[in-house]
Length: 135
Image 1 (cartoon, one colour):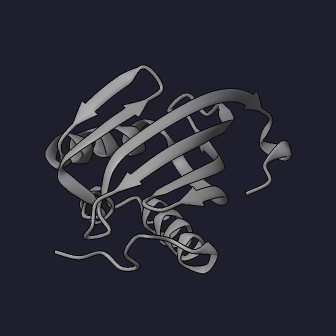
Image 2 (cartoon, rainbow, N blue to C red):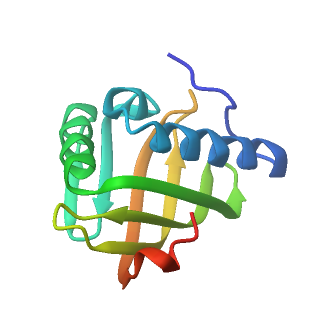
């Protein structure tokens, strides 16, 4: 399976890859999102280490059960050959009704078929009032 655009990336194809990821994550469909990753993908998400597409699906299903009204915005930070760096922010509401904005950076590495084989995310949460929402 190939997931275009393929590396090596230029500015346009890197931006396209970032927008595709943003759109997929905002769908909150764990299976759709997971199809952008290799079968044996390696993730670090905060303090969680996740390996394999099936585990990514389970992680994302649980994420969106706990992070309601999720809305994400990604921005290209840099790129080189088969790697892309992204900054992002997203907002979500807990089951208890509290709102948060999460900020972070991701480092992505792709295989020759354009599937992400590594994703390393550093994320910080900030509690916000509903009136402070931006997204």
